[in-house]
Each structure stands twice: as C-alpha cells, then as structure tokens.
Amino acid sequence: MADERPEEHPSTADDLLDAGPRASKRIIPEKLIGLDDHALSVALVEINNAAKRQRDMASAHYEAKMHGLAKSAKETKEFLYSLKDDVLRRLVSQERARLAGYHSKPDPRGAVQFVRRWVPDPYDDDDDDSDYYDRPKEWVAIPNPKVTVDSEGYAVTYMESIEFCGRRFHRPLSSFPEGAIVAAQIEEELSPATSKRYVRRKDAEHTLRQYLRLPNVLIQAELLVFGKSVDEGRVVEALSIPWIELCRQILEDERLFYEFARNPRKFEEFVAGSYKKMGWTEVVLTPRSNDQGRDIIAVLPGQFSIRILDQCKAYSPGHRVTAEEVRAMLGVLTGDRNATKAIVTTTSSFAPGIEGDSGLAPFMPHRLQLRNGKSFRDSLRQLYPSDKVTI
Image (cartoon, rainbow, N blue to C red):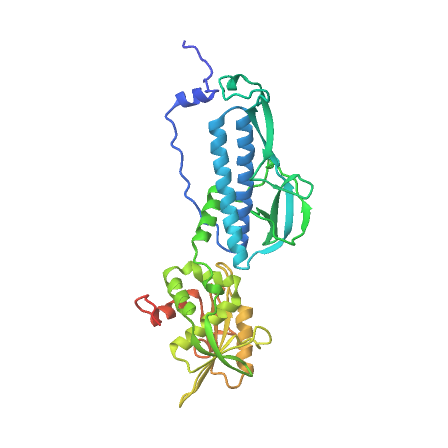
C-alpha cells in the first residue's frame, strides 16, 4: 500500500515560484478620474501623500547607505511635488483656487553649510606649499545661498497656503512677498503609515497631467464686444478674437467645453456670441443678478419676428439638468408675453425622462427646446463645417 502523505504546499517565495509557471503581471491602464474640482482635489491629495512617502523612503535609504535607491526616491519626490505645484499655480490663475495666507516651516538644510579646509600657517612666509596637505584641517561655516533665514537668523522655508475644494495645500515660495504676514509656522509632517488612499497614484498622475494639457486662459478673456445698455441687459455688438479662437479649440478638444463649469458667466457670453454669429439681429446678455431666469435674449425682427429666451447651465460631466430646472424655464416663458420660444442650453446633459414628462412634453420642441452639450457643439460645427474658424 502506498504511503499516504499530506499534500505539501510551498511555504516560501522561492517555493511558490518553483511550484508552477510564473503568473504574468496584469497591466492596469491609467484611468482619468475626472477634471472637475472634486476629482482634481482628490488627485492632489494622493500626489502630495505619495511625495511625502517618497521623501521618507529617500531618508531611510540614505541612512541604510543605499544611495542608488535614495537618489531614485528623491527624484520621484521632486517630480511629484513639481506636478502638484504646477497644478496649483494654474488653478490659482483660473481663480478656481484662492490664496489663503502664508506659512513658514523650519528648513532642515540650515542657514549655513560647513566645509573642511586646511589651516593656514601664519608663520610661514615663503611660497613653499609642499607641506600644504600635511597641515591640520578645520571646519568652516559659510552661508548657504539656497536657504532663506528669518529675522532671528534661523533657516526657514516660506510657503503659501492655497485653498481648493475645501482642502488646504502648501506650495514653497522662491521669495517671500514684501509686506506679507506669516500666519503660522507648520512642522514637517511624516507621511502617515496607514493613510487612506482614494485613488491610485498612477491615476492621480494621469489626471493632473491631462488637466495641465487643457488649453488655458482663453476662457478668462473678453469674448464679446458690447454696445449700449438696455433695460434687459447689454447689447452684443460683435465677437472678439478670443471667442473665435475658443470656438476653434472647443471643436478640436471638447474637454475644454467643461471648463465653463468653473466660470458660468463666460458660458453665457459664449452662447450669446453663437447667436450673434448665427445672424440674430439683436442679442442681449442679461445681468448676472436679477435676470428673471433669462441669460440671453435673441431677437430676429421682421415680418415673422422671433424672440428667444435662453437659459445657460454650465455644468461639469455627470451633473445633469433636472426636470425642476426645466419647469422653471417654462414658467419664465409663460410669464414673458413677447417670448416666442424658450431654450435651455447646457454643457452636460439632461436628466432621463424629461422629454416624456407630461408637464413638459406638450411644449417641445416648438415652444420649449433642450440643448445638451453635444447638440450645441454640433450647431457650432454647422457654423464651421470644416472645423476651421475664420473671422
């Protein structure tokens, strides 16, 4: 009878490798977690924590005399901090993040650095330096040009505190602004050993890099040339060159379209410009407040005079216009006796079932029209069918 022995299981890493063919590592592609404020803030938190982990690893490797690993961790840390600072700098320039104050923290490098030199011989008057390397050595302190010192001479790093999406981030300053006040001193924090990770570092990096690739500052420019003021708002006289360029970039990269969610007023200006470009004779942009639910009024006078009321909803992807918001626009249409039609234009989409709503469906599409982001971009392509914008 054969011996019945218990089945042996590999217990070590080497045994596991010898037990069968090595499993191939599954490559998980990078994922874009979103470009809205919340997604960017989550990505910034992960990148900041990852940079701290790399900083602590660099210190540990250096103490263990593993200088190659220490150098690699240091380079990764510097890259992550640089990525975070670039994103924060751009968010501040877009007025999506605000400067909350200034802080300082001790600089571990010190205000001085020490060098070792040979002690000069005060009694040696000749030019013979044959005994130069036989002389005793001493440590001499010299100022460290890379370090800033406070009023008491201590080495510090000044940082600006940036508030974004309910979170605070710190960014080092190359020079402290004259007249600024330091709110508090912060201590260097160690990366938490069991910090909660909301996203993968790989996804966070990918998201922030994609954000930095988006076209910048055009949305902040003046998009329209205004004429006289009327009771309902300001008359649009013409389009500015930034409107033309912005339209071209939106047709090339629709992700820029969602940047309007950070500045809804600019979306209203952009939509008003599209009416002017389509040939509407009178286009009025209503005030920011007390607009009575109408962002744009477009009039085409003549034998068949038409008066359009447009309400603009600049939302991020996934934020849909609700049925209640559409019903509110229908109420605005009913209250304006001269209005021919009401339109709701959004950068995103509408909640499911709106077109079949019993209270809204009888008015669509001749009295009430819904324009989502795709249909609005399609109307821009009708203006420029070859995706080539000219003045």
